[in-house]
Amino acid sequence: MKNWYGIATALLILVIAFCVRGTVMSKESTEHIRENERYAVWEQTFKKDIREVLAGQGYQDSGITMNWVKRDGKRTYTVAVHHRRIGGLKKEERERLVQTLLQVRAGDEGCGIIFELQPHNMPTDID
Image 1 (spheres, rainbow, N blue to C red):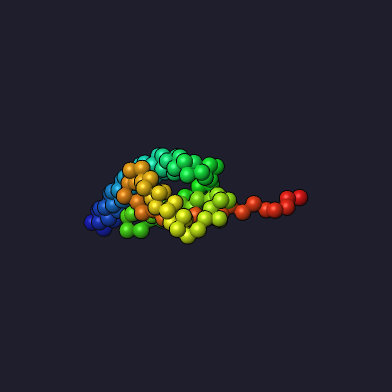
Image 2: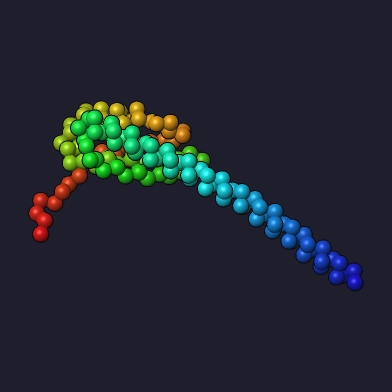
């Protein structure tokens, strides 16, 4: 009989431990979802602001691709801007455009941002 109580106590402790672990994991998951939702809103606003600046600089209809990595709890975005006229820019003009784009921080949530300017090469002969 004594052995049965020991087994029951051990099982009860395991059940409690799994319940506590599940509650903590659920809370972390909810916080992760909220963080992603907040960043998704920020990303949309940031892209819109970048498009407006690019249009004002003569780069209407630019393609914008955003990727991010998270290190030490901080997101760093790589923003690639694609436009056929970018290929013809001199180094100084490219640097000036990047500096202009870096000013569009739009409440950047403390993110790091790297801009890459890429020419958009269209095929010369399409069959």
